[in-house]
Image: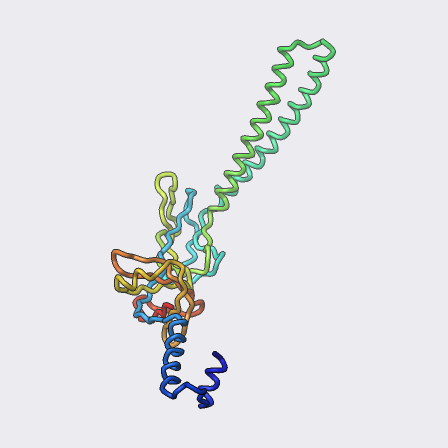
Length: 265
């Protein structure tokens, strides 16, 4: 086949092969080449933001600091909302002290138990007295476990007394103010709404026939203002006949509703 193609390029005719035959063969080869390559279709699309994430705090306290405002960009790990730290720090200190107390009482109970077992082995202590000492040791062990659990709760609440950005984000709205009291025991209250920076979505409408050829996770190319970005199909709405594409554009800023082209292979 390669020799045949090279002969065609060189204009060499083989015996028994006419120029019309070469033309037909070339047409067949051209069609075969096209059929072996995926056809890429371009679709008009509109840029949208990814789903907005609302964040709340699982603990109750006074809001001490609000370090962001709507429209501000934050980096991952930046402190966004800070509650009054005093009650949480005090609760942790109290819990740690309680653990120390319970540890000493358990040690004392274990020492008493060892002593009473020696007396029991020498038959100078009754079974009832030994059982009473054993139960005191068991209670001391349980109290220590309870104190450690309380310390874990105190550490958990202290860690969630501040809200830090979980990723590079754009602040869409802030729902609390300094001095406001948050009571999470009654109802979880969103304190801030974020959307991930550099992450965008494109929405495009397709016909029913085109929609049937789409699949989640399929790679696409999004073109905006002369730049291309690699994305994937993240959603297919068969009722609305539209497809959602997700892509990243770190460092670039696009407006909601901005036009784009999506190329699907």
